[in-house]
Length: 250
Ligand SMILES: NC(=O)c1ccc[n+]([C@@H]2O[C@H](COP(=O)([O-])OP(=O)(O)OC[C@H]3O[C@@H](n4cnc5c(N)ncnc54)[C@H](O)[C@@H]3O)[C@@H](O)[C@H]2O)c1
Image (cartoon, rainbow, N blue to C red; front, side, top):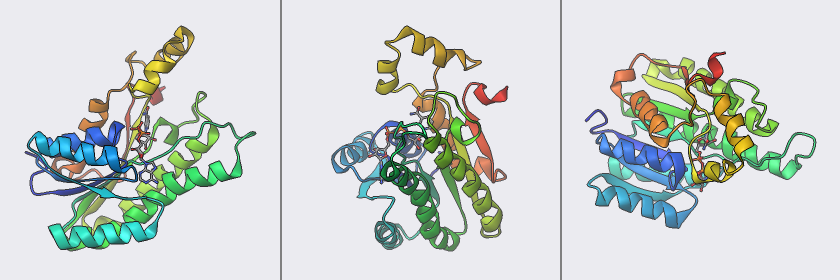
């Protein structure tokens, strides 16, 4: 099992991609801290992993609060004595175009999508360094690589910031054997998207932009995260990995 003996923090892991990554990491042998501000589904996700024979626990974390990160890292240090993997997955998307975007909504997106990962990395580094190294994975988007015509601007701004946060961390902390890479999924098949696809025009529009002609699955993304987290990716650092069926290739 390629993540055996590794301790992993995953943010926004109560549901969606974060939950799928948590499940996958646990299958690969990691001890997983399912972190989210949403307690009930987060607790259920961690319990599901344990029921399936994995090692997991839930921790309440609001990624925008530095005090939450400090107490999370203290508890990880005390209980597990090490940290190997941090996945900054939590994000929000308030779909307002730039001309109508309300300032408070822009601030909220910057806080969760940019400040959150920044604080997480800040407080993970000392523990990773003491553990002999680590793998940080930032969940960006194709919108962190290109201007995407179906996506309002603020999301692109936050995901682009994450792309370069990844590279600067990868460059500075390679000396501590800490690697930092980002994942850039195209639209993932979630209940929300299925709702959107009830409109055949929307479906055609979205699938038409993907050379492989389908949506990403949560497994496509979780598989990539498991690879980047593992020692098999020991020489991958500062990489922006599209998981998009070729969408940004042309
Ligand atoms: N779903 C897609 O199509 C898609 C495509 C590309 C990239 N992404 C990215 O993948 C990641 C996960 O997406 P998803 O669709 O699973 O999202 P989701 O909305 O289903 O889940 C996000 C999780 O983050 C949590 N969260 C929100 N704010 C938080 C905070 N302040 N502190 C802690 N937790 C918080 C929520 O409670 C939720 O559990 C995001 O970074 C998203 O931008 C998603």
